[in-house]
Amino acid sequence: MSAADANSRWMDSTSTLGDRSAYKKVWERQAQDPDVASLAVAGHTDEATLELSARGFIDTLRTTVGLSPSDVILEIGCGIARVGRPLSRECTHWFGADISTGMLRHASDRLKDRPNTTLVELATVGLQEFPRDAFDLVYCTIVFMHLFEWDRYRYVEEAFRVLRPGGHGYFDNFPLDSSHGWNVFIEGSRYPLDRRPAHISMASTREELGIYLRKAGFVDVQVHDLPNELIAATGRKPDC
Amino acid sequence: MSAPPDDPGQRAAALQAELDAVKRRDAEFRANMVKEFLDRGERNTYLHTLREEKATLVKREQESFADLEFLTRKLEAEGDRSSALEAELQGMWRSWSWRLTSPLRALGRAFSPGAPAPAAGGEPVQGGVFTYYLHTAPFRVYRGDSFTLRGWAWPEDGRAITAVRVNLDGRTFAGRHGLEEPEVIARYGAQPANPRPGFEVTFATPPGRHLLSLEAQLGGSEWRWIVRTSVWCEPKAP
View 1 (cartoon, rainbow over the protein chains, first blue to last red):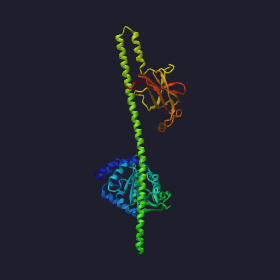
View 2: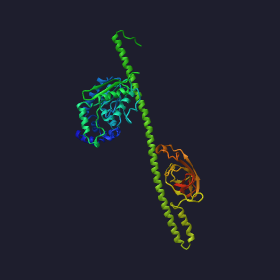
View 3: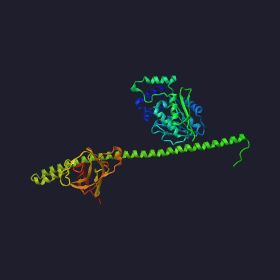
View 4: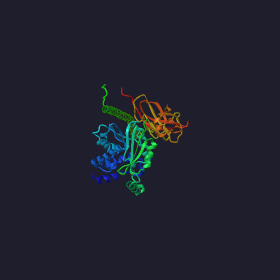
């Protein structure tokens, strides 16, 4: 399937803004075939580009929160395991959680040769499937733009719960005050009201992300400006 | 246990290796803990799946009962038609004697589904509008000496059900009402006058064809039927 074809089918698979909170429905529709799923979560379909962008993100994790071979890691909204596949080589165990069964099916295909990975379908917004104090690192990348603010905060709170004391959280989004962020915002504003897609990207501000982490109980909270025009908030769960 | 190396550099390296090993064991322990937690969640999910399957089976059972009821009604209609034709035939054969054919026509009328069953005491019982479900469908061939109808019912006018009974060809059998139906309440909420809508009635099933009428008394006064049908009782072959 060509990228143009995938793009047009992706457009067909989108839902309207009224469905934005129905994350399972919205993302199941976009997960129907691997190329559309890949386009929806990463913006491209070829494996080499997926690997390259994942490598870039792993470097970001390394510089912002640090990585250790002994880490037990959870990704919120892992999609097709774009990041999980390479990251699983660098940790003890990688858990990928997503609300879409379809996305997890594609992820499972991509992780067949990775025994230290586990995929978990989330029933709803939150991490109720996971125990507290379990992970060294919980991260959520290229997800917050698709969530309402309340749900962003819910995941930050839940990440705090499932992190072990001393563990790190990482959450990114594109900022409203970058040229890219402003363009996305203006493009979104031009949709006719009744045709805004449910997955439409919505920016964050530095203050917003920082507040979420502090309110959830994180310490050492920092908001990083990343080279790819994203901002990322990181924090540490205090030691007991 | 080997003695610690004298060289501080070597000692630091050995301690670092030991620390790394502890960290790895701790990480493996936590990863296994998460997996066990997830397994437990899956068991809960499995319970949920079983409950869903149960609900599907109940739905399928209800559909089967509906089919059976439809077929029973057709059989009743055919039975009535057959009785009428037989009566007509008898009439043709014995037209010289009205008195001789009269009982057959009366028999035909008695088996007509439109005719109200005589209640105990003789007064006809009118039909009522009920929301109901019978756990044990009356649409069957009865093989034993007795049968227990179990189910739940709500009159649509919201009046309290104060008694239930089965009327089998005019012979009445009192039942128990006010039985708990937690799944019904959970699904539909309670009807104020009938918070426990369950009932059961055991009645005799003597051989032959009978008109069965399941009836409820409303507000302590009038009786209304919930469901009526012909039933066939055939003893088990020896």
